[in-house]
Image 1 (cartoon, rainbow, N blue to C red):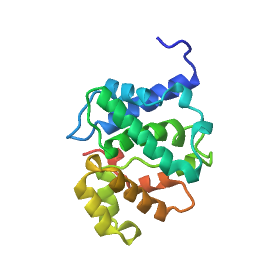
Image 2: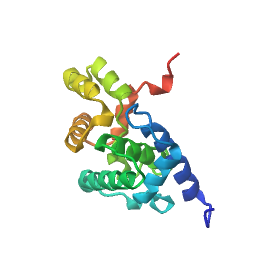
Image 3: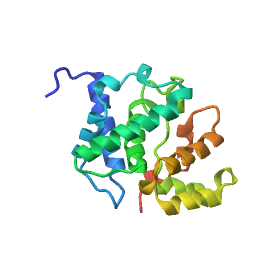
Length: 184
């Protein structure tokens, strides 16, 4: 039981659940939401992390993100799972999206430079729409599969997103994501 259940605890629980649900979508790397939450928390993403002042500046975001991915990969290993940088990034990015981008801190300048969750649905839509005139690149990334990305592949996808939104607000790339529409 949590010592003190407050707004940060509440947002953390929701964000961790959402991230665990999103990141376990890879057919190659299934894990329970409970395990996803445990991995996030072991890597330092807990209710104490819930203030945007804990986020790095825009200029430090990529190096901080690389360190976060490495911590998640180590934590996953400690929990009997092998995560790629793609899976670690999806877990982190979905968590941060739910916690900050879709929360009361959405307009904080640091939040504008958080990486968006990357998945096959988004990459396919980017390729099909020839977003940024880079259909061939997006299709290559889609075919590789987000859950297979190593650190270089993941960071290259983020560089391509950044090129579309150089002023920040990388979350806007998700206007192309069709996952909310279901498979009806």
